Image (tube, rainbow, N blue to C red):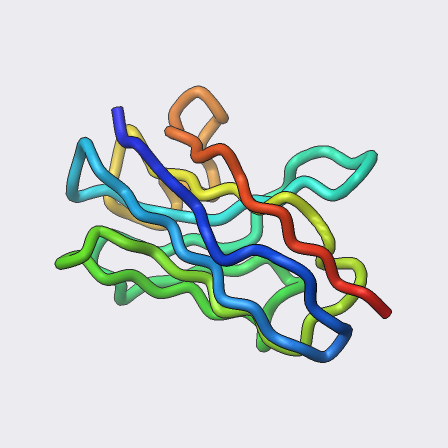
Length: 126
């Protein structure tokens, strides 16, 4: 089981930027991703990245604004969030696939096939 610890959340103004980090330990060679849960809503997928870092995938609402990347030497995944909107306000969770290397192992995985971090709060003011 992977242990995941998120950091970098906080308060930003609309149009601003934040960078989330997730330090991973316990396993290697797996796909990583970010999810979020807004107040009163279900958790939703945000972005995923393959083990190699070459392939990425985003939900439509963040395309062109968010960038996922990873550093396999430091076992860390990042989410650079630009042009933030109040609708981006949520708790952001890092996730690691238990089953594979591809971003599809994040996007299509049932929750029980992922390891989860505890989350970091992102609040965007208008």
